[in-house]
Image (cartoon, rainbow, N blue to C red; front, side, top):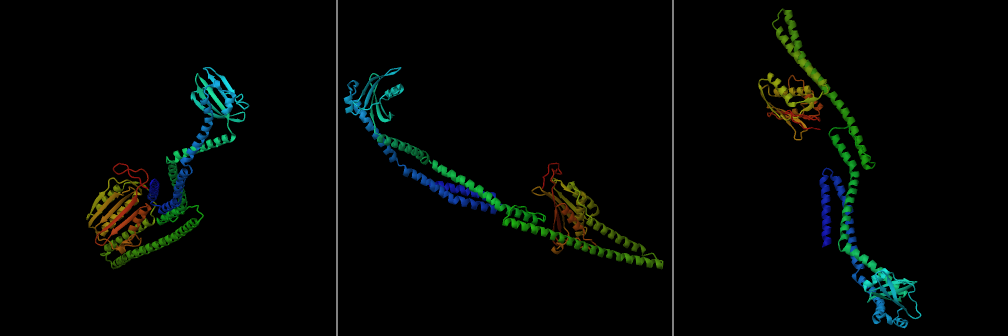
Length: 538
């Protein structure tokens, strides 16, 4: 049950991590998928392996180290020591009076040497020493005074020690009157080796038991396994992130390049160090964009030539239309002079003046359109510019009502004031002509929701335009007016585009026309028209 809960916890954590990776990389789904796949590829086989190893370690600790082994070793050790102690204790218990000890008694009891020490505060003294007949003894060996005092405090104790390359078992026993008796007898070498091996085995068993108690029973091995899984997940995630970044980096660069090209930047080149298939693909993409730019430049040049040819034909046609009544008027004036009459001369002169004024106006518009300078930008308040244009427009169009709805919190923009004024004048003029000098015009300004652009709208309630005309209104040679040049809206579009803005037109027959201009806010810290800080655009 515990193993099942641990596995479920690890699995839930893995799902949480993978879900976080998926949510944080919404714009890089392929990279997120690749990261998740590589992480699972490492984690799925490794997690069961770690848990199986942990189970084997815990199970083998109980199998290889049963409690009975330690008990058996302890019993064997105790049994041997009891046998050794029994020989000395029988002698001490049977003959407690040291004055009865003699060589024959020690030989019969298999005791090689017996001693009695008197313990004083400052020193110890040997009172009695008795050895068996013709037997090896402890010789000159002498226990230290501190050891004698310690043995006396223990009551009965023993030790196995080597004296002159012989293994001796010595039994100590405290007696009355601060006396300590000891009995020594030799021990076989095989028995000593057996005791050493048993003690070594007991030490190993105690160490392994400590390992089992502290690691297995206290779940240290499971905690280590869980930490190992966590570490493995972190390492797998880092490696998968690096691999996915290396694999998707060129792809992301290619996507960025495609977006830039889609926005019209055909000069953009994708930089990459990849030498594989991605590098080849990016190289072909760069070659394609270079070819597209070259083709676009040629097409643009051809379009410009075609546009100027169309404008030239339109201007030539309009000039011919104006010269015809001029020539007729001059011819009529010549006839009047030959006949000596001057009644029709003023009318002819008026016609000539009107046609010449029309030609002059057409030449002015054409010159302005052809020689449109680069905008000289400064801080411009759109509302102030719109109000000025509307005020001048009202004086010449008494039959048109104009309603202003301006956002007073509108930020300033960086623009050419004179060019934008020309744009407003053209939009108001087109709106008035669409209503034949009678109707309503609404001029509105507002800031976008993100604060990065301002919008100016001119809406009229005129006759509107059908779709086939709407899609051609910005062509330089196109006009629906009888004596128009077709350059007004083309000039408006050119000015707006030179300010990196856009113009939108909505119109339908009988529903009027709405023209909206969108311009970016300047990057510098600008002030709103009410004096507060404006939004900084990009």
